[in-house]
Length: 314
Image 1: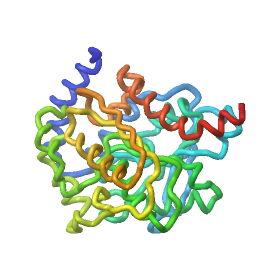
Image 2: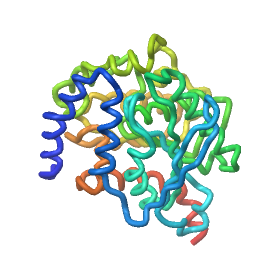
Image 3: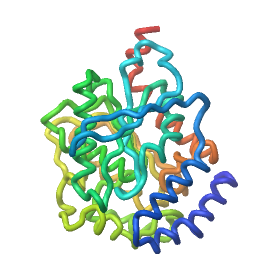
Image 4: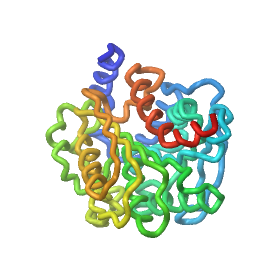
């Protein structure tokens, strides 16, 4: 563990986790995440962002297209990443994650589309799920073939990745592959790690599950597979999946349990388990050496999905 990671975890435990424990209104959390994204997060050189509009569950929704350089290989020109940001279903946006995604675009050579799905409490469940499914359908209607789409997300956005898979299972073709950084896939909060890692997690307070149940579910049942996609039983073989998570975070078992569901129906799963790292530490790329190393692991998984095409080109 680097000294930077040790100091970052200490800061998170003393200030961020304590702040989240006292949170009652989502507005301050949104503002603080936006401010941290602007001041602390790092982007690679020549990052390019373009505003766009996608079809959403309620009509039009904003999205951000992110790239860092033209596709260096023609075989990658029509291949993209559709990414759902995290933030506990109440905070975050494509803007808070744009620097992380710019680095991922640099590493993979792929363009990234990040929808600004609706957040609670203004728009509770299932608004976010509807918007993410609509974004996927929109890209297909615009000519992007499902086998050329990689689906990804972190935390709540990682959960939305699997909510989308549950929604389109047997209805639409699956994407080429999926990846998730510490997703939350069971809003019943039954994973043992919520209690086992309550003290070990330097960022997320296990006792504030009400932030999701009260604001996002807002009375809806967590038994619904759109809210808890770990409950979905697949009709078709799911696409290859990559999970990255820390052994000491409260969401550890969410990845392990979702991986079991996918493997049970023939899915190929890669688990990238890291010791003693904070939740979604890859967002601190440029600040933590562990973030760059972890993001490289995810980028390698993504580029392997198109290995045959790029090899044929060369």
